[in-house]
Length: 278
Image (tube, rainbow, N blue to C red; front, side, top):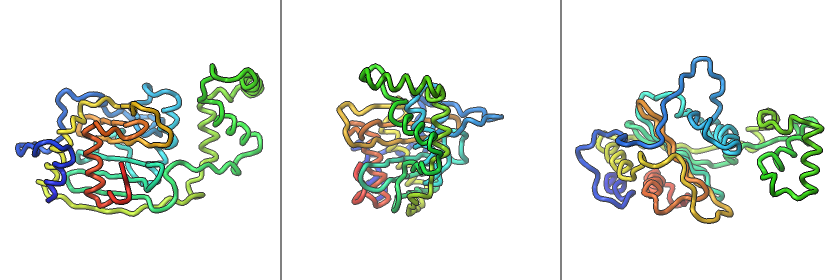
């Protein structure tokens, strides 16, 4: 029954029974070496290898929202070093419904489903002084906005504030104020955990189905092609012996991707398809 459920995930043929139970890395795309961390203190980011690739806005999301996700779900950062076993992880935090984290390796699946609170960082601005709060408000409204779209009045205010407080142009200062205000306990996050143990054949079936999605050939980011009002994409990561790979589906899940179907089946395998819709 398990094998049938997993192979259904990709709507393809049955998995190859000659599997070596490893991610297919032939012609792998956007897979990254693990960093040399000797003396590094800038690892507070979800996907370390994307540091120099991301826009300032996306980078800020990775070091705020991304790190809140790791902290609240009590998860390791898969981008920093290879784990003892090849490990895969799916994360989805929809606008409505519980957030889900599903991690699996050769031993089984660990699923974490939120039951209370929110996954996003919570800011408690009462921890800031009056001027600091004003500055943080300014950052939230203006820092990542497209200045060319400002009205003349709005641009005059922006220029006036940044002349008076030059630090308002600094993303590092924004992050420092943000870190000072963040409060992980103001909306207590809780989750329930479910563990499913594998035998060898079950894990191989799952990896074969993952390989059929051509996950290895996906670029690290694909954006939903239409307009998105209220939506949420998902993340899928692979921590292999030699490489780290991340896929981010921005905006909304894309139905035409085989990986989306695979992730839906992961949700079903852990018994959460009634409460979580991908």
